Length: 124
Image 1 (cartoon, helix red, strand yellow):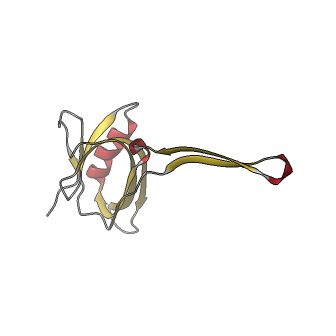
Image 2: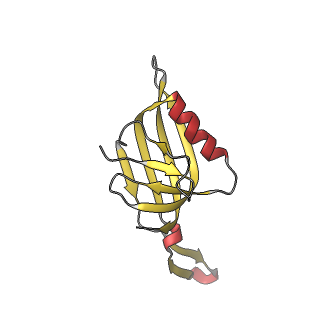
Image 3: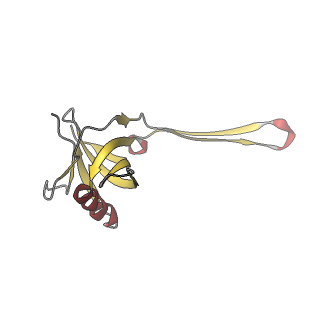
């Protein structure tokens, strides 16, 4: 089974997902742009292009043990840290851990979890 893991950039303290995610998306970067109405019915468009730093990785897993959630939550709580993310296709990313949303499974000692990472750099 492919491994999905989050660790410090020096590869220390890896935390692995318990199961493969049911959803895994590496979205294309969003365009940095805005469009504003002006007086007289016109519009002003600002377009700053596409930046790799605007890419995000989102995933959802249907089963995460409490100990695994605690390990991810401890990483999420670290302020200002960038992380090494390795996905199941052996792509490596430097990421910022932006969101962690656990939802306890009724009658289980486990969670369904959604996570979002902001890409800092595509390493490989």
